[in-house]
Image (cartoon, rainbow over all chains, first blue to last red; front, side, top):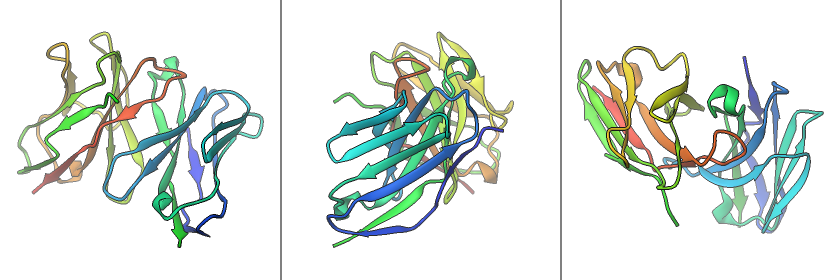
Length: 113
Length: 114
């Protein structure tokens, strides 16, 4: 059974702080990794994708991947109240699994003004 | 920016009735997916579709479910005889490849079974 685990939170940070979100996955066959943001009652919105070990930065967001530890993280710098949402980690097992994404249960982030 | 569009946004149906959820994937994407999210729960994979065939399906996707690409733009999910437990948000997604490409999600259809 392929699993993706996240702390459900809520994670509360003050405005301007760094928010750190973590995710672990169970299957070493995982090929690509994604962070989605989901506002209440809305659909998942892609924030970051990462495919190889190391860091990937996009604006205020940095994704980190460590395949040996089966660990993915997302850092949000200069957090804003508008960043308050649930952050979903998703793992893709590629062509052999028909592109299936396995999602974690999400971490709820609250950024306090 | 191109996006995945889904209709209707909300569907209310009596138990036992058939329902069809519609999606228009991003135009240059060839890989299509359906996911569902029961209120308060994880997003769950239902099915993936490529080249007019199902590529992968989950245990949830039983004989009551079917998918179709009836024309060059639409991608549909049919539930033949709905149950109360089918009540959920249903998301359509599309991507350029199965692997190493992100999936982009539509706004979803909220399905309520009475």
